[in-house]
Image (cartoon, rainbow, N blue to C red):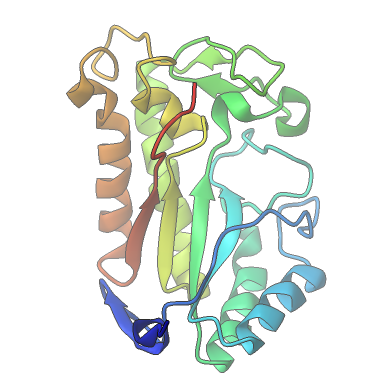
Length: 227
């Protein structure tokens, strides 16, 4: 069997990827505890670029302070990580690859101890694989969280990424709004399908506005929740 298209370029928004080989976002716990990417992190992604993957996706990166799912998760809720992210982009670009970064808030799947703050979700419903019961996000706070995604994407663009991937799957914060199992809200973000999609739609619109068409915008969603 021939896979001719696997070795041909593909255009995604403003980004042209040299082939169809993609490194998905995989947590590696190589980040520094302050949320910056370590030298080990940089070397990890540089090696994958040397393998000639067309698109390399950086692991789930925290977009809001107080939402870390683990002690060694990279973060983009302030400017501290821009420099180390730039080094990853430079290393991948040197091999002709493109960089996508996954933006994430663990939400109900997080851990209050690691996060240093109570975990949050659409409704106070415990995640299947988590111990903590999340606090319901206030309506006002939802709009603040939307801005956080846009600001993180803006920092990623400054560092030189070619695409951002918004994590809306696996029971994390955004998925908790999308799912009727975990969203029992009675405001404009709960109830009917349109309302449950309002948070993710606003995030996409905010990211588009903040990145000004400079990067491709990808979204990760569930095909099924298996629950």
